[in-house]
Length: 173
Image (cartoon, rainbow, N blue to C red):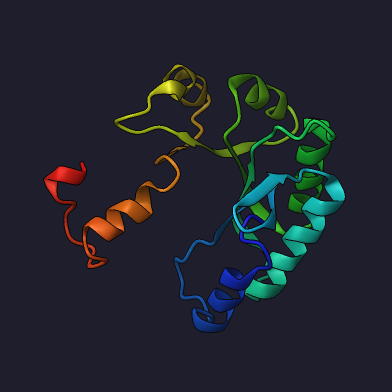
């Protein structure tokens, strides 16, 4: 739902389908768009369900392989309600694995009795090691960790490479 009206999903559903064996579809939800560059947490159970059902329809899928709940900081919705709705949708066969994104260790601890956390994604890179203390909390139960670059880094690197996928010039590293 962070993609706004689902245009990216619709393009994927039209152009990539039928999906070949071994393709894993991952989706992240929980941060809705109010307009260009204006987003806010949207973790209510009703919104979670509507967003996931919309993704499934646009992607032309029966289930999402990995669905990550993004940013557990919606003050209007208890985390257990959001995670609980994802657990229900997982039991319905709509989600294979539930991951979390930008969760604190405390939020991860709250989520773990409700779901088997399939992955954790936080900002972690050469320039930002703030989430390093939490790595041991992910490693203990064997939860896969998906580091992500800071916002905008990917687009800056693509520009620096001229969009050709080549190495990043030394001056931009």
